[in-house]
Image (tube, rainbow, N blue to C red; front, side, top):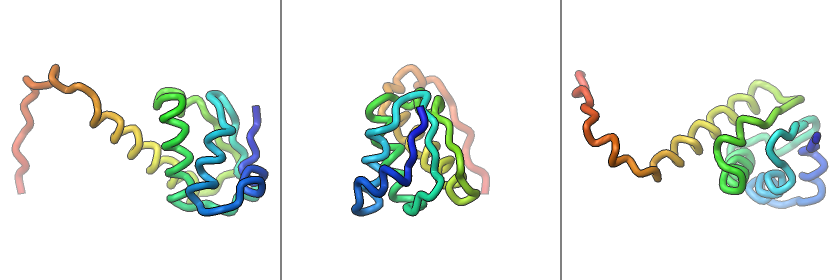
Length: 108
């Protein structure tokens, strides 16, 4: 299924965060998200899109999405936000099984 981000942006005007959340509510795993004509190419909109999608479907399903009609800025934001959201999700895991891991001291 192809989701046109610009159409959702027109249907749900508002702040970048509300647009991002609205987009996430239309996107399902394995969707193709078409960013042609999308105006809210910024960290807030994309962060909210990724956050809502991951909360709804899980971080593994985010990698099933395909993005078309992007540009270098949007690609960089998507990559940065995805990595940050997935790393934040890892902080909530039970890490007791890692207690035997030894970290090297930082050498400055």
